[in-house]
Amino acid sequence: MKKLLAILLTLCLCLFEALPAFAAAPALTASSVNAAPGEPFDLPLKIENNPGFCYLKITFTYDADLLTLEAVTNGAVSTDAFTVTDKALQWDSDADVTASGVLATLRFTAKRAGSATVTFKVVGCYNYDEATVPLAGTAAAVTVAAPHVHDFGAWTYLDETLHRRVCKSDSSHTETAPHSWDAGKVTAQPRCAVVGVKTYTCTVCGGTRTEELPALEHAPKTVPGKPATCTEAGMTDGVVCATCGEILIAQTSVPALGHDWSAWTVTVEPTETAEGTETRTCNRCGETQSRAIPKLEPVSEPTDPSEPTDPSEPTDPSEPTDPSEPTDPTDPSQPYPVCVPGDVDLDGKVTASDARLALRRAVELDDHLNAQQLLNANVDGDDKITASDARLILRAAVGLETL
Ligand SMILES: [Zn+2]
Ligand SMILES: [Zn+2]
Ligand SMILES: [Zn+2]
Ligand SMILES: [Zn+2]
Image 1 (cartoon, rainbow, N blue to C red):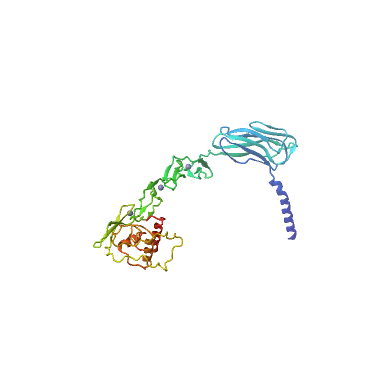
Image 2: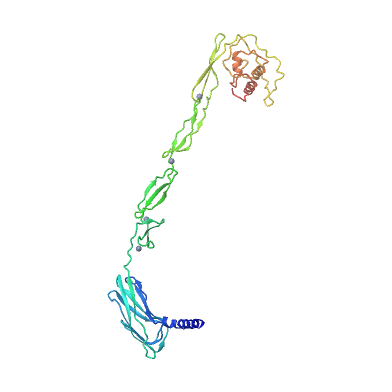
């Protein structure tokens, strides 16, 4: 048994050692190629498992209707004594060449779409010992595809400058082109202080772009006001925009001025039996006001001119002193001088005596002035006899004031 096994093992080893010798048959190869019409392509012819040759001649055929032979270049296997025609390749060396690889490269151009075969036939192959090298021919299929025709879809918006279309047959094929803008349309009218918008549309892809239109300026228009009167409020001028109506400067109200009254003037003298009337007029609007003057009281005792001076009334320190005008006692028998402002003692003149009487009345030391005296004493027009009246009368007496 053991002996048999050993024999089998030895046989197997011998077989394995012999196998490479069987596998290494020399061969010519040429791969199939895809080509495009009008475009040159290369067809390499190779030798594999070269056992060594010094002479090799290969003829080749191809469909000349479809292919044009452009060139043949020698490969790296044998650089010696290479000759080529449009139908044959030949190597003739002094020694065996044993390299495997590219024998030669044929360059063709395809004239049109179609398919063809390039066939290589070994005419002779010998080694240095003139033994025939067993090398078979080969063939390569050439497929020339029809040229690609783009089938572009519609143009679509790509960016603010370009639109783009894509080939439906091969989405890697794209084309871009600049937009073709139309004349544009105003899509938002500019208004006062508000910008407008103009929109342009691409006539090819329908994309849009917009441009700002400058805002309009307000058109100012004056709204006339109304002057204030004595009794009615007025308004200032205003400004509005004639276009949009916006109020640019608002009107404001001006309060009524109030009447500008003149001094009261006696228009009907009072008597002992009838009231009089006094009137005043507005200097601005002419409005008049009247009021009654009480009846005159019957004249009784003359006022005492030597009445003690007012002990408590402060004299006006800045007022000039009485320039020694003699007091003039009222003569009750004389008629009342008509309406001399400041003439309290009714002597027809304005003197310090009048001021004194007014002052006494003001501090209520003397309350028996009659209506005419009261009227004359009220020089400041406030309907009351006060120190202010006395002061004005005194100033008038010395010529500092005109009543
Ligand atoms: Zn395409
Ligand atoms: Zn476009
Ligand atoms: Zn406006
Ligand atoms: Zn008035």
